[in-house]
Length: 102
Picture 1: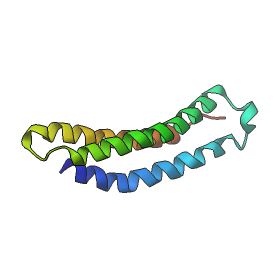
Picture 2 (picture 1 turned 90 degrees about the vertical axis):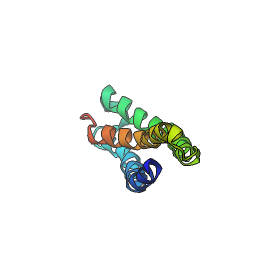
Picture 3 (picture 1 turned 45 degrees about the vertical axis):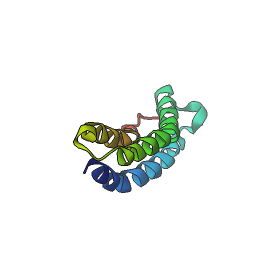
Picture 4 (picture 1 turned 120 degrees about the vertical axis):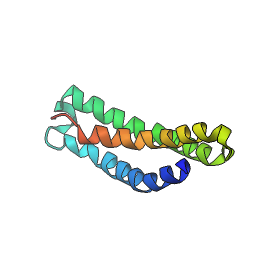
């Protein structure tokens, strides 16, 4: 059940995180990348890194949640892997929605 829920949520969260994370460098348009605050530049670097490495984590955890045996013994690990597959997308969306001023 958990992998199916994670798949349904990733169907919406994944593209939203990629879209808003991809648009986040536009936050430097008003100040230029050389004159923006250090907090903004650090946040943008964190978003970029999370989008790259988080994609690997999401893929691995999502596949793991589907591949683990469908027995009661593995149900907790399947649910944890499914929840872990959602974390990078949620983290990127949280960072984008709370960008500091430039």
